[in-house]
Image (cartoon, rainbow, N blue to C red; front, side, top):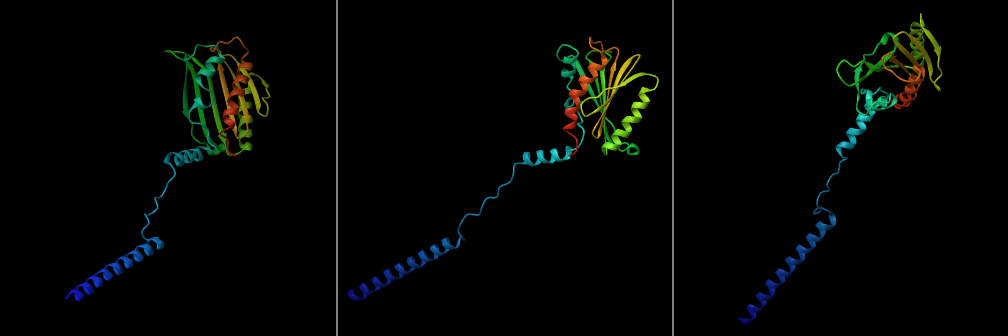
Amino acid sequence: MGDRGAHRGIAVACRVLLFGLLLGVTVACGTASGDTRAPAIPTFAPPTTKAAGTDAAAEAGKLPTDCERVLTANDLGALFALPLDTVSVRSIRGVPQPAVDRTERIGCTYTRTGPGAPPLMELNISRYTDEAAAANQWRINSDAQRAGSESRDVPIGAAKGVFVERPGEAVLLVAYGVDNLTFVLPSTAATDRPAADVLVDLALRVIPQVRATMPA
C-alpha cells in the first residue's frame, strides 16, 4: 500500500512538472513570435503644423487682404509726424478684371481718427497675370493721369514711376513686376515735405512688402 501511494505521488509530481514545462515553452514561443507584444501607438503631426502649411500655400502669390500687412496705420502716422494711434486704415478687396489680365486688387484708405476727418493717403494695388500685362496697364493709366496735368518720370530703383500733380492732389503711379501701385496724396494731408518726396518715401516702404507676396 505504501509503495502504491509513493508511486502515485511520483506520477502526479511528474505530470505537474511536465505541464509546467509545456506552459513555459508555450509562453516563450509566444514571446519570441511577437504575438504578445502591445500594438504600436500611431503618431500624427500636430494639426496646427498642417494647417499653417496649407494656409501658407493658399496665400502664396496673392496680395494681402489686410492693408496693415502692406503699411500700418502707425507707420503712416509716423511719416506725417502724428501721435500714435491717431490714424485708421480701411481695406477694400477688389475683383479680378480678365479684360486687362488683372487677377486681384486691394484698396487702402488711411484717415485721421475722428468724425469727418479727410483721407491722409489712398493706395491701390493691382496684380496681373504677368509683367507685360502689368506694364501695359501702367502705361495706359499713366497716360490718362498725365493728360492736362504736370507730370514727370520718377525712377524708384527697379520700379517705374510717374508723378502727377494737379489741384487738390498728387499721384504717384508705380509699375513693379506683376503689380501696379497707385498712391494718392490729397492736398488736405498737410506735410512740410514736397508731395513727390512723401510719395516716393511711401513707395519705398510698400514695394518690399508687396514683393514678398509675389509668385515665384
